Amino acid sequence: MAFDHIIGQEIQRQRLMDALRQGRLAHAYLLYGPSGTGVEALAIELAKAVNCAQGPGEPCQKCPSCRKIQTLQHPDLHVFLPSSSTKAAKGENKKSEVEGRSDARLERRLALIESLAKDPYAPFIFNKNDYLSVDDIRGLRQNAYVKPFEGRRKVVIIAAADRMNVAASNALLKTLEEPPGELMLILTTHRMHGLLPTIISRCQPVHLGRLPESVIQEALITRYQTDPDTASAMARQSDGSLNQALQAMSEEGTAIRKEAFSLLEGIHGDHPLQIFEMVDHLTAMHRKTPVVEPLLDALLSYYRDLFILTASSKETMVIHIDRLDAMKDIIRKITMEQIEVGIQDIEEIKQSIIKNVHPQLALTVLALRLRGRRAQAA
Image (cartoon, rainbow, N blue to C red; front, side, top):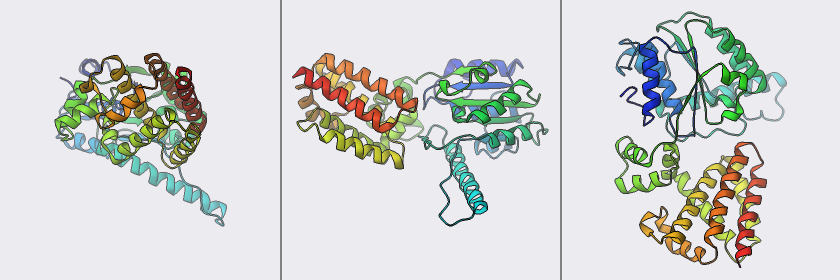
């Protein structure tokens, strides 16, 4: 199978390999799909394939070109990721402030690139202020017209392309309209709605779907040396996303699941005013590190367990077996219909977060909806 380093996605892998072997590669690709499905990993493998010393074709993974691209250090590979900088300290003059922000932004970007090179499937959370600027795209354009140094083609990967601001998007359009012959552009995104339609129309789209539970379980065991029982549990709650499974196994993931269950207990507990305290607490956490989306994923997995316990009582299918007794207490207070509608509510709020609704407002609305449905059942 083509692109063996990619987990799952067999049809998409074969489609790209066929185009490569037949000399029909597009000048610009848009790899899109849910987080954790491998869009960044596939972008890197495609960059290897067009410049492999044994190719073009299946990357050998051994030649200098493949090894340099794997570490994102090839002179003909340019990776652009969203990044931001912290504000300069008070008292600094304007020049120092601009230089300080520029240095901080570069430092942030290098850290993100290092993380991507280490494992393109690892949990990768951008801050809300991370973005791609018009200066980034202008730098891309200047580089695009320079001949390749070592490889056959220059490859530019723009990760999380939906985080381009308007000026950056318009600047990129000019390159897409008049691409140099030796340049391949690869855009990746988990949020298609954040891209201009004119950008989408000028790229060859490749959609990566959610990964089957069995594929994620196997990857956790073979690639991440996870014991089979843990791999099975994490795959069940991954929602088809490998990095969601990896995040769930991390210390941060454990903490988020704990917070999500506290919110669940608060919603269905006897002290409704505590809900507002919890929302304030979670909002404060989110200001430091983005936690609302993974928290909603965790809350959704708890509701899945409530559904299973209510519908069938099959405890072997429960993901959060460590919370079994507490969840049995909760299902005594709510109906199956309210669990089903609650799942819809969480999905709806997840979409509102993606569209930049304020996290505190979104969490408050969700908690009150879920609490209100519980009150209706009483």
